[in-house]
Image 1 (cartoon, rainbow, N blue to C red):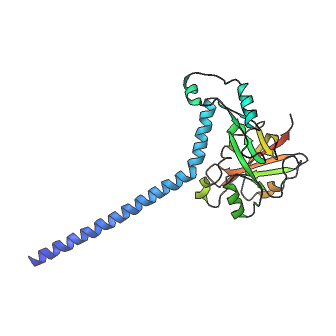
Image 2: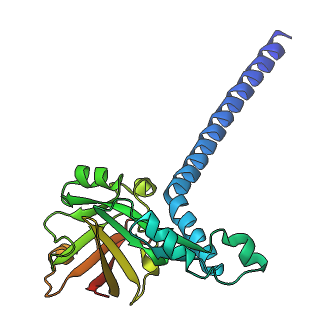
Length: 247
């Protein structure tokens, strides 16, 4: 009887150990699953949100106009037709036409096609990770050593860069939709209270190590915009090229 009780006790103890082992493994597995889902969500939330916004605005034919001041925006909106009305488009449309006023008239970029509007941080050292990551928490970076608007040289602006893959979603999302730009699309750069217009002429995708585009020479005022590509990754770099135009 004593042996039977002892055997029963050992079996019960073994079952308890197995239960604890299974519980630990399940807890660890669930933790890894939820951690992975969190990291994926953190990384791709902003790109996906921007894509959905852009899709809705395309379906509802929403338009953006660029204005230097609030007064100019009000005046322009008052004389601009609101477009088609009715049906689902009317319910989703919200504001059919919206004015984009530069975040900072001293230095900002506004791209009406993708609804982008952000302050530009001047003279950012693109070779110092700590400096450029800090700058990209506050706006778009202007690479130190490249020209400023109106100087007739090569202006290089960048956003959405990161130190590690899982931090992609942390930094400025203003350029997530840069891949939507095509030849002829308008880019506006405001500098020291003046508005400079550029039209897209080309774009390309390059490896991160291809830094020769930073020192590109030009005989006209030339603008390069850079972002990581595809959105939500750090695999490549998308470069969009534009030239200044005058009205």
